[in-house]
Amino acid sequence: MTTFKDLGVSAPILKAINNMGFEEATPIQAQTIPLGVEGNDVIGQAQTGTGKTAAFGIPMLEKVDTKLRKIQGLVVAPTRELAIQVAEELNRIGRHTGVRALAIFGGQPMDRQIRALKDGPQIVVATPGRLLDHMRRRTIHISMVQIAVLDEADEMLNMGFIDDIREILKAIPEGHQTLLFSATMPKEIREIATTLMNNPKEVKVKAKEMTVENIDQYFIEIPEKQKFETLNNHLDIHSPDLAIVFARTKKRVDEITEGLQARGYRAEGIHGDLTQGKRMSVLNKFKHGRLDVLVATDVAARGLDISGVTHVYNFDIPQDPESYVHRIGRTGRAGRTGEAISFITPREMAHLNLIEKVTKSKMKRLMPPSYKDAQRGKQQLTIDKLLRTIERHDLKDYHEAANELLENHDSVTVIAAALKLMTKERKDTPVTISSVAPISVKKAKGGDRRNRSGSGNKRYYGGRNQGGRNQGGRNQGGRNRKGNYQKSRNNSK
Ligand SMILES: Nc1ncnc2c1ncn2[C@@H]1O[C@H](COP(=O)(O)OP(=O)(O)OP(=O)(O)O)[C@@H](O)[C@H]1O
Ligand SMILES: [Mg+2]
Image 1 (cartoon, rainbow, N blue to C red):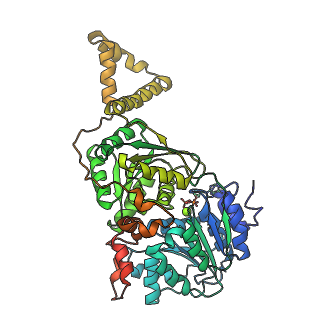
Image 2 (spheres, rainbow, N blue to C red):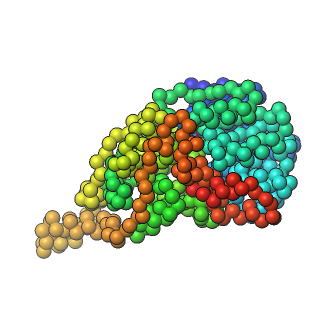
Image 3 (cartoon, helix red, strand yellow):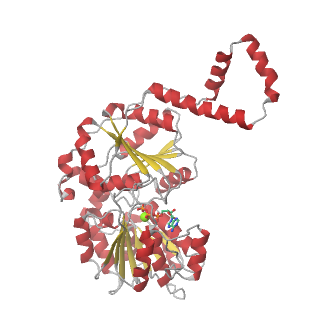
């Protein structure tokens, strides 16, 4: 066991992480914090939910000169929600240090961000598109940055982002430290990474599987047309605390969300075509348990840390094994358990094998639950509630009424009526989800998956989604954006 004190972490940070309940350092933290503090470039790879944010955040916070109200640390992250979350985590860890972190992302008014930047944060956590906007308008000054982090580094160094990242890193003074973190790091991306770094130390936390052990992984082989009913049945039987349902396109996210709502579930969707306000309000509702099901594109696949997510459904299997790792990693975080259930159409079985091979994990087959199983599952929940009431409450006040009821009706009928009343029955509103073509394994085979995956490529790698179509200030001010960048954006998640 390594404590943060053993790692030489300073008193103000120790105080904060102690309050946050971190008792010992996770392996990635134990291995990378000293390297980062010593000034090394680091590539850190460790499973989802194992505390990579603090692994780069602590060295960054330690290095900031608090007397200087200039940006000294820069974190670049692929989505707006992740940028917000990382800035929040850094502010929590840095609470007693006097360091302030600010999130800068698309979809928010530029002037508001300009004002916030003038307040002198020492750390900025940004999405690349909006950061470049500020750089080109000279409303951000990053010439004092000593330490740069690419969170979700493999995603940031992928086709949709790489040019932006190069441009950003070029604007930072030479001799800065670069830290790269992710749960996945395909070889070809690692090679690109090292060209941007200075003699990096590579830390890979050894794990048998790329996925987290305490996530139980299942698959259900099922025709496309039965996916929606199967999802309903599964939700009814397992009644997850919080569930995330990943779908392939924005349109499907909308359709599944509307379908679930029509059936009476508390569900909302998140994807790149929604306004930033809507994206944030949906995520906040989900975090606070005012939603049970979040339906999402890959925009929510990486980095988001929402406690209480017990189930992740892949309504559509992702194209890339890496995406699978990140999606299911939204559950089973920080030592908790979780379940991941992937729906696979018969023609996609080969793709499932590929995912298993790359991630070195195994999904167990589940038979699709039937409507009857679902009904029974819901009734069981009611029965459990009823039994708890019998155990925990004095029911004497109800005896007289109960006896009267039983004088005129048989006991089975009375109990059945009570169960019916207490059971939240699913509405049987008809729902159709438009079909999509199955994912073909041919597109995703071989070492050079990315360059061969055609339109699927754009879907996953293109949709960098700083803002979808609602990019707020992005296109104001008559800048000329690079065509390829714009194109990839418009294919966003
Ligand atoms: N040493 C620790 N002890 C206990 N909890 C921790 C520790 N370090 C981090 N955590 C908590 O664990 C959760 C996951 O951390 P974090 O989001 O940094 O994971 P991650 O490795 O970045 O995952 P992902 O690959 O999905 O981005 C967070 O809620 C964080 O506050
Ligand atoms: Mg992370």
